[in-house]
Image (cartoon, rainbow, N blue to C red):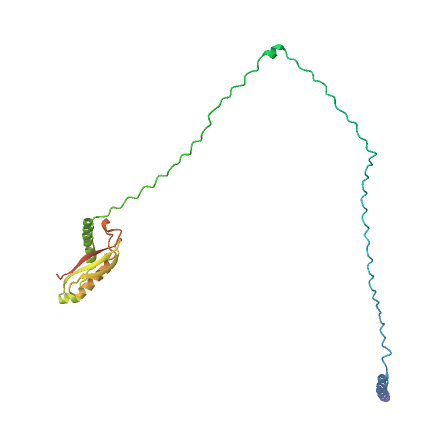
Length: 243
C-alpha cells in the first residue's frame, strides 16, 4: 500500500512540473518571437542588367562596272593591196556537123489539134409542186330538204317527249285538257338550248307540265343531215286529253 501511494505522488509531481515547463516555454515564445526580425532572413534578389546593342549601319555595296568591249581595229590603207584583174579567156566551141541526109530532111509536121465545142451546162429543171386537191365543197340543202327534215325531226321529238308525259291530278279532277305548242332551239348534237311556249293550251298548269317533259327528255336524238352544222328552231306539239 505504501508503494502505490509513493508512485501516485511521484506521478502528480511530474505532471505538475510538465505543466509548469510548458507554460514557461509559451511565455518565452510570446516574449521573444514578436521581437524577432525576419528581414535578415530575406535575401535581396540579384538585379539583372541587359545592354541593348544598336544595329550597325549596312555598308554600301559597290557594284563594279562591266568592262567596255574593245573597239575593232580598222585596217590602215597601206595594208590593203588591190587584187589583179583577170579576164577569163573564151575558148571557141567546136561546131557540130550533121550528115547531109539529116540536113536535107524537112522537120515533121506538128500533130493536129482536135478542138471540141465547149459544153454548155443545161439549166436545172424547176419542178413546180402540185397544189393540194381542194376539199369537196359542201352541198347546201335546199329549202324543201330543210322543211322535210324539220317535219321528220318534230315527230321524233314528239315521241321522245310523250315518254315522260304525266297528267297533273288537279287537271284531271277539274277536267282540264288542251294542246300546247312548244318552240325549241336545238343544236347540231340534239341538245336543247332554249324552250318556250309558242301557243298555250289554255291552262298554265298544262303548259308548265309540257316544259318539264321537254327537260326530262333532253338531250334528243341526233338531227338529220340537212339540219346538222348549225342550231335551229323547231315547233313540237304536246297534247293533253282525258280518255
